[in-house]
Length: 176
Image (cartoon, rainbow, N blue to C red; front, side, top):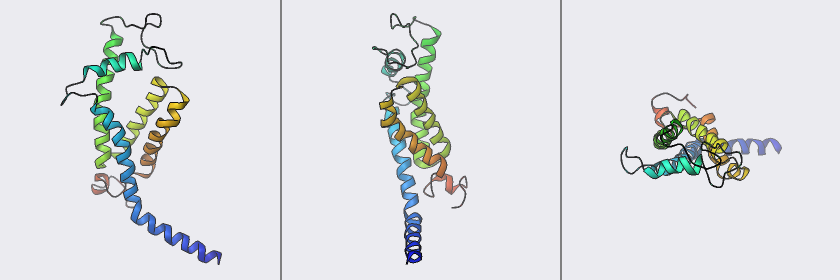
């Protein structure tokens, strides 16, 4: 009796894996890509026209918040919560904001179409880790939403994008 149940279980879930795995992996790719792509779109006012509010977001919300978040990376003067105008730090933060805006568009697009999917997932996991460790180092932010984003990226990194991807089509993924 146990052997029959075991055989039924294996048969049933082999069937489910065969027919649903690639659809589920596409769904995971879409979910993770959507979060970052939506955020990336907000950082632009048109094709390669950065939204100036993005710089303020990085300068004051992320790296010089008022009130100061315990454990967050504070890059401004902690007494005045201001930056020295024209400083190298301001330039570096503005460049980081621009780079983040580009990556939040490029990596999700790669992930969505399934091109260099594992690289894109790894890049987004790096962004999640930076956001969690440097910008919002609270447990509540890790539990929801950061851990979910990280888990989606980790699953795609480990399992791969599935057969519904350009990676599979051009031979970047092993036959499975």
